[in-house]
Image (tube, rainbow, N blue to C red; front, side):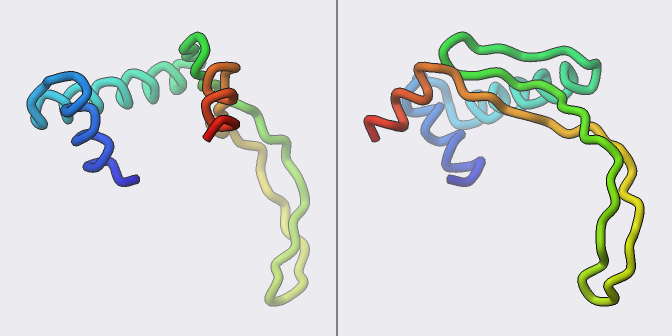
Length: 92
């Protein structure tokens, strides 16, 4: 599903105009991103939790040359699904 398809469904389910639904979706995504940048988790009870995971430094291998390289430690976004979301997906 593309972002536009998502916005269209939000507009349809909420009764908002497509423009207002697009603004709302953009605002939600912006708040989640800003919160993660600030090191805060975002939890939607039943749906899931967005958090920042720390990936340790490690050694990788260039597949073309076989050369070993050092990969620096980094922070990555992480999503952990909640029980309601897991149940909805299982029931498909």
